[in-house]
Length: 451
Ligand code: NDP
Ligand code: 2IT
Image (cartoon, rainbow, N blue to C red; front, side, top):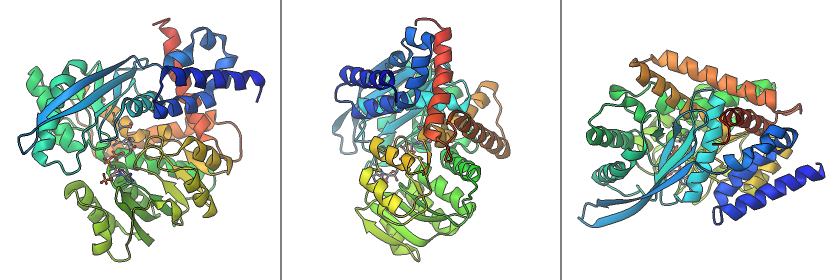
C-alpha cells in the first residue's frame, strides 16, 4: 500500500471518529467502505475536490422524537425514536424501522449508511434511510405493540411520503407492525397512499414475495457465488443464526435447494440438528417463531434430532457455510478462527454488518467466499422497491413475476461485484460491492453539484 493511501485512510478514520464520538457501529461501517474505495477517490480529482467521501459519511438529517404510550396496566411509557434520512442521491430515502432495546443513533446511522449503498446495488431508484425506537417488543402484548406503533406514527407521519421517505420492517418490525403503522398513517392523513410504507399485507398494497425476499435473496446470491467458484450448495452444512424473517426464509430456501440447515438460534441459544432440519421441521419452527412468537428452545423439545445449546451461538459448531442473520457484530475474531478450524467455505451476511472488522478481514484473507450484507441481503429492499413500483402504477404482480425480478436483481448484483472485485482466485465480493455501490452514489452526487 502506498504511503499516500495509508495516510488518506488514517485521516478519514480520524475525522469520522472525531465527528461521531461514541458511535462505534457507524464509524465501523464508514471505515469499511472507505477501506475499499479510498484508492478510487485518490485517483479521481473530481471525487477529491467534491469531498465525496466526507459528504457521504454525513447523514442528510437525523430526526429524533419522543413516543409516549400507555401499557396494559395503564402506566405511561416513554420511548425515544429516530428516523435517519441518510442520502437521497438515488431516490427517496428507503429503509426499515427497527424496534429493539439496543437501538441507538449509532446503530441507526450505520444502518442508514449501509442502506444507501445496498439500495444503489439493486439498480432501483432508492436513497438510503433507517429508523427505529428503543422499544423492546419482547413480552409486550399485541395491544401494547399496536398502541406503540400508533403513537410512533403520530410523529413519523410528518416526515414520510412516497416521494420523500419510505420505511419498511427490520428487527422487531414485521407485517403486523407495518399494518398498524400503515393504518395510523391513513387515519392521520385521510389518504390511502400505498407507496408510503413497504412490507404491507397482500390485501392492502403489499407485494408477493416481500416477506420471503431477504432470505430467498441471500440463498440466490450464495448459489451464484458458489457456482462462480465451481461449487454448489447441495449437501453443504449451513449454520444460520437468528430465527426471524431473514433466518427462517433463508433456511426454507436453503433446504429446498438441497443444503443441510444445521442451526437456527434466538437470543436464548442455538438449536442444532447434525443431519440438517427437513422442510417440515423448518415450517414448524417458522410457525413457532413468526406466529406463536415462541422460543427456539421449544424446537429441541418437539423435533426429532434437534439439540438446544443454551446461551451459545452457532459459530463453534461444524459447518461449511455460515449465514449470520440476527444482529450486527455477532461473529467476532474468535468465532472466525473456529469457523476456519472447521474449514469454512463461504459466509453470507444475512444480517447487516454481522461480522466484526477484524473477523471479516481474517475470513477474507483466508480465502473464504465472503458475501457482504449490502450485496447478500439486498433482496428484501429490492422487492420493497418493486412494491413501490406496483403501488405507483396501481397494479399487483404475480408471485412468479416478482420472484423472477428478484432472481434477476440478485444475479446483476453478483455480476457487478465480480466486475468490480479485482482478479483473485477467490472473488473479492467485499471490495466489489463497495466499489460498485460507491460509484453509483458518487456519480449522482457529483451531477448535483455542491448540495
Ligand atoms: P427479526 O426481528 O425477524 O429476527 C431477529 C432474530 O434475531 C430473532 O430470531 C431474534 O431472537 C434474533 N436475535 C436477536 N438478538 C439475538 C442474539 N443476541 N443472539 C441470537 N439471536 C438474536 O429480524 P430480521 O430477520 O428482519 O432481521 C435480522 C437481520 O437482518 C438484521 O440485521 C436486519 O437489519 C437484517 N435485514 C433484515 C431485512 C428484512 O427484510 N427484514 C432486510 C435486510 C437485512 P429473539 O426471538 O430472541 O428476539
Ligand atoms: O436492511 C434492510 O435492507 C431492510 N431492513 C429492508 C429495508 C426495506 O426498505 O425493505
